Amino acid sequence: MTDFAKTRAMFDIPEGVTYLNGNSLGPLPSAAKARVAGVVADEWGELLIRGWNKAGWMAQPAVLGDRIAPLIGAPKGSVMVGDTLTIRVYQALSAALELVPDRRVILSDSGNFPTDLYMAQGLIGTLGDGYELRVVAPEEVSEALDDSIAILMLTEVDYATSRLHDMAALTARAHAVGAVTVWDLAHSAGAIPIDLTGTNADFAVGCTYKYLNGGPGAPAFIYVRPNLQNHVRPALSGWLGHAAPFAFEQDYTPAEGIARMRIGTPSVLGMAALETALDVWEGVSVETLRHHFITLSELFIAEVETRCPDLTLASPRDPAQRGAHIALRHPQGYAIMQALIAEGVIGDFRAPDVMRFGFTPLYLGEGDVKRAVDVLERVMRDRLWDREEFRVKAAVT
Image (cartoon, rainbow, N blue to C red; front, side, top):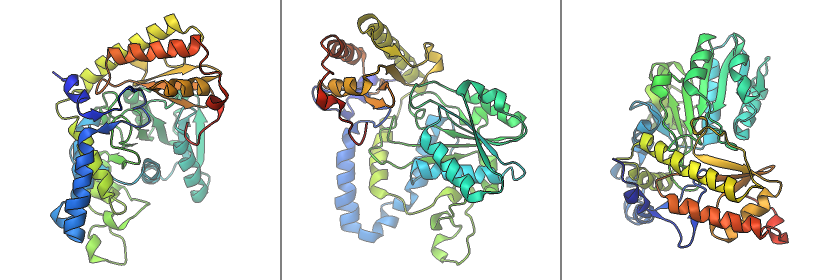
């Protein structure tokens, strides 16, 4: 049985703060401070460049990939960690397109995270030659899949509303028409059960700084289905994805398997923090996590709808149709969120009017939910949000 009291004790959350923003940035795992300090002092400081061999720095991307793999239903040797999610989207998308050279259409939906669409736009602008990004409403994706589609590129959980796509059904539908799938798991990994193997997904990418709690700017990951790995050509053919990086050959020869998806030098300090974040997951059942999330989110929705009638639920009503955050709408959503943060309840805002609240039993319980709604009710009832300073948009919302 998963012991969430134990996992809650593994995080440093400031006194007096109810943190409901793990869907954007997970909190600090307590062990990360000592681990990163140790890497700086004992590995970088003492070993210097010898750390690449003696401290295992060079192996980190694959070692951490194998630790993430069970959380996303992937086998060992199918996940590589490193670089950013934006880079990983480009890498997966370009590799996927080469698997269907006779097709030119990338299909996505209007709920996709904008950077995924931007990367697709940039890639097809480079390729030219009739490539097209076709964007439809989320509920129209299945119907839009036909034999003109090369790639189905979707974010499994909508970053704004938390709407959840049916990965198994849409992957099967895409394969039935000869398309390749690229799934973005940014709001899924560490939040909901994922079965990349069972759904037969082709490519998947994700970040580690949200529900995996790897820290700001933590490295991303990429998954390639094992039987495709030696057939994909990395468009971003970095030296560490070479079959023999230290042979310093002039021409690129891809490494075998998932190793070819490595690009540049790994971020050793970032990976050290991620290592401690993944320690939290030892013994944690994602299925049990999901069950407890639903309990917390249903409590939150019920309390909000009873006590804050001016707020509108933007997430799907059915918990089976949403991820691990709850979205509420209000025309003054930004100011309301700033007022909440000033009162120690931290969520975030997404334009034009969405307030997001992330729930994970790793460090949240029913008491946190009730306190958050107590504060939210007071902010709404007493119009605490109606102050000029709360309307001034910060660089990060």
